[in-house]
Length: 604
Figure 1 (cartoon, rainbow, N blue to C red):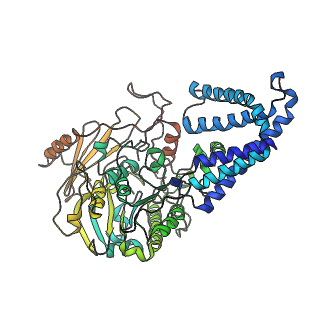
Figure 2: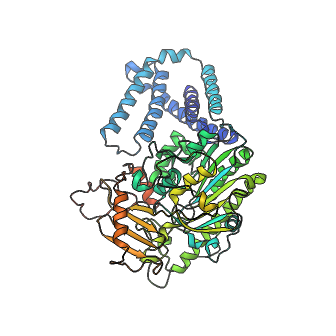
Figure 3: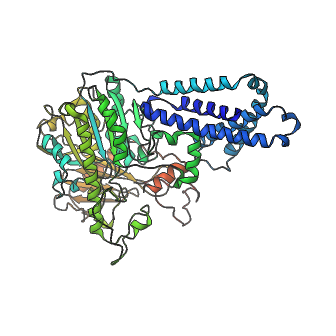
């Protein structure tokens, strides 16, 4: 019985420590989560107590008669050891002295502490242990209470990012598939036809979108990189009075990298049961039961299950919501797809991305995969419709932006259904639709070239907030109002290959009618996008090639060297399974490359 009570206390203490408004658990969800924490830890304590009772006769002399202290020490050692291993040193090898030495120290220290406290624990009756459990449980409920809205006089703002969604597969841009919700936003808002992503990689592109600083200057060129103190646009809006909430669907935007800064709620919980995988004992189970030990993504339905209640609750107040839908990212397996089973016979096997599952690797039809890609977009369009419905009567008061972090190569340049390794337009041209009745014209199409890097300053300017100086992006309110285009080249960047310091980075300088790509090895390619929109013919002697190269090198000289991603095994494994890391190359490393067991950098 003592073991059970100690276990319950441990579960309540963990819940009290881990609770907080950032997790965004509603009361009912929090109570379920708390119940699981108590159940798991109580069962653990009960089992340890039973085992201790059976082994009582085997205890050495100094420990006999101190069973309660010993039991407390064992439970403490288990909980402290789990948190040490899976919170502080999750991605280090167990053979590392810091890991095994720390675990041994925790074990020894916990047992010694338990033996010292044995007499104190004996004086504490089971009743007081249960009272402590109740008090800690109530504390967890209080700590998890949501942040209340600060103001009611500011407009709702929703930014929706469609991961891996290229512009030309959407009906507002001419593709022949019905997307009623995106079409509605296009009719009632303004469509930018020449929006260019800052990177064909999730994290650096989103960072450029939400800071206004391009990857070549921020130095963040790959996934798995800590954001540091780079100010995100929602931090500025939070300071101005907006309630802020983020709901993301892919591991590259996990809060562990800093994306939750400035958020009152940041939901990156990819499990079906909110909060479950934050519990220590569940993290241990994840190491055994889940491939690569953690959840990596979720569908739009999973995002909406957390976002829609929050939007509905706060729609009469001033809020900013960032919604990230990851479904269009490969492999393409849209829920409810009507395509039927994919063809896996006939023709040659396609060179599909390595991270696709084996059954998808056997698909032989490029046309089928293009239709599957479109099915994913249809699914996400339906999710957008649910977001619009959740706004109810506030819909016409809300500023809504729909865009994408990057596109996808379907078959261009022999690159099948992937992204991140090159800087061609299929991976860089993205949708950008802005709807705000009364402030943004309806039914207008703007052909000015704009960048993802312009999103943050444009949001701030539309919302009458100060736009910081020194950004790479500019506010596009002039273009939204029908004014002349602000002619500014767009620089996009990407990184690939083994992890070296500094990482090899390719850059593209895009003007409305041309593009110059500068590879990491110094070679360059120039394309006339008017005569050659498919970027098939490299022009060596075009009159604009050398001026573009000089301009790009000049701009790059003011930037930053690339920042290596977090060098930990779990991050690398997660990003590899999502297709953001190259498979290990078996060949011997170059002289300046890391050892063969070093992590491989992410690339998509």
